[in-house]
Image (tube, rainbow, N blue to C red):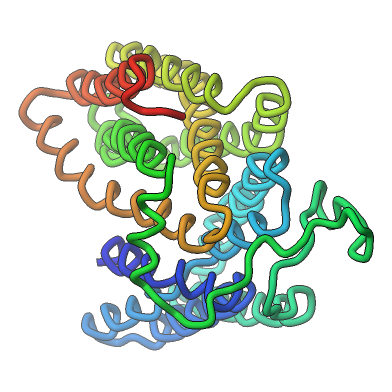
Length: 357
């Protein structure tokens, strides 16, 4: 249910961002989070728990953050800054589960109350440091630094006037802007390839690698650490030296080989070793692809990011059923070969020019 609500909400949130501002969406997002956690904390029946998912229709903090970053950065800095957004959320995901586990020992619902309080605090910080704007601001080259003085003749003008009204139909127009269909094809093929593995990770960790829950948590923290390092260091290093096209092609090749090797992994050590190239390559490919989409549709940053994230949500809705069927019918190696197959298709399509990055 959460995936479906996020998919629908993402489609609505993009045009809302372009019609008003990313700051407004971020404020609404944390307000929705506070409501969701309040309902969860006070739930006494199953239907109340389901009801608590409804506010997540507007829970799109990542989308809002990416839209704000897109609007305030130059194209040359965009992938790096989007990577920093992922890094910031990664830190939160690293701290949050541990803190929640400690708090839940006293009372299970205390975690939801604490999360709600944190969301309300975030709303106060947004009001204090991200005042609502009605137009775009000059681009930033580094966190908090303007690329040119606002009153300078060479200052970056507002990227685009905002739409005067909320119009979800604009999404269809944005989908067919030159270059966008190819970039979305990259998102679908790479997302499906990676999603097949992500969807069954918990099952495979217990059945194939015989990992206890605490060890599985350590492996997931290891993967999270690799992701954060990639977002903090690798993205800036790669984007400053190589073109987006070369990065996409190289990462696709690494992931193709990586999932083939992962099919033969037998121990936890093998799993951790194969994650070393797979996680950074996947992180780099996804971030650069998102940055490319924002460059392809500079007049509609919120809408294109919403499309990007909604495609990801749609893939996550489909891949669990696909990977579970393949795992049950053919076994773990065939799931990894299937993942490799999607990256093989992507590499071939890019190589012959069917997909242009």
